[in-house]
Amino acid sequence: MDSPVDTSGPVPAEQQGTAAHPRVSLKDLFSCFLQVGLTSFGGGTQAWVYRAVVEERKWLDEKAFLAGLTVAQILPGANPVNLSLYVGQRLRGGLGALVATLGMVVPAICVVLVVAAIYSHISQFPLTQFMLIGIATVGLGATLAAGTKAALRIERQPVAIAIGIATFVAVGVFHWSMIPVVAVLGPLSIVLALRRPRG
Image 1 (tube, rainbow, N blue to C red):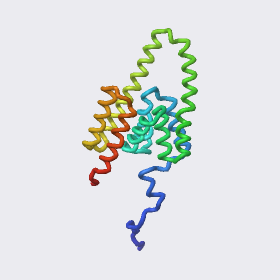
Image 2: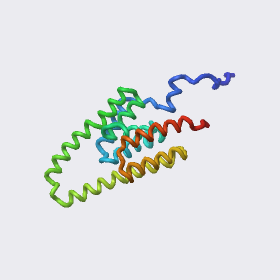
Image 3: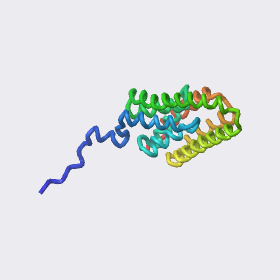
Image 4: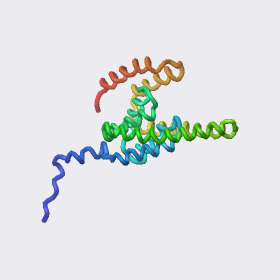
């Protein structure tokens, strides 16, 4: 009779990293951001990245994605590019960051150039303006949907909610510059998170 398998021993290193950070090939990483870069519009790009990376492929969870989205918004530069850098680096290191960014940026630039050339010939038509308004509405709706889904699934902490509300009021209501707001609330949120009791 075969002896029972001992499951109490240490888990191999290659299996330990599978649940938290699945091994993603550079080809899949490039393909993912290529698809996002070619099919997303404007401010809705982050929502498409969320759908591709969190919902469809499950490469990151909501908490990790929101952390990356926060970093992407704080750093200078375009948010979608910063987000692709974060996801690529998180999954495959520096090379992954480069591959993800190339997938996001290079094809999108080509599409923008083609669309800009077409727009210069059709911008005077009223239908063009209606189409652009519709595209912008889709991007806004996708962003709100992704934000709502992520917000409903993450851990709710009073301190995090208070920091979020303070940021919204400072930037969205009073129109204060993002730099001083982040300079004050960023370190404060870190200190409060470190002082929070661990469960």
